[in-house]
Length: 104
Image (cartoon, rainbow, N blue to C red; front, top):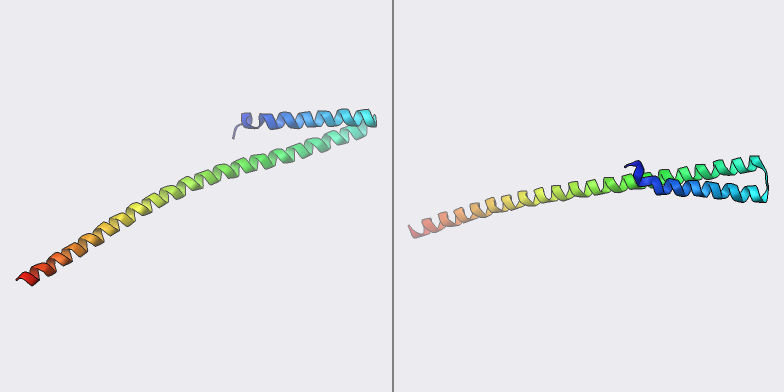
């Protein structure tokens, strides 16, 4: 996962923090409350960002597992076809053997 993938989320978090500061400074005009709200909004945005990163990572892992399962199923299918061919060949040989014994 690249930083370029999460740039929109980072920009939205910064916008959310700046807008919270503007609203708080207009209403209460207290620097301590403004800084507290800024830190709260940034922490909340960071938490959301971590959740998004983990979700993307889980999505990538799910895609990899799906590919691996598909590959394993294809291999299993090929093995079953080979066993079926071997079994059918054995049955055909047994039938031919019985036919030859019957005609003697």
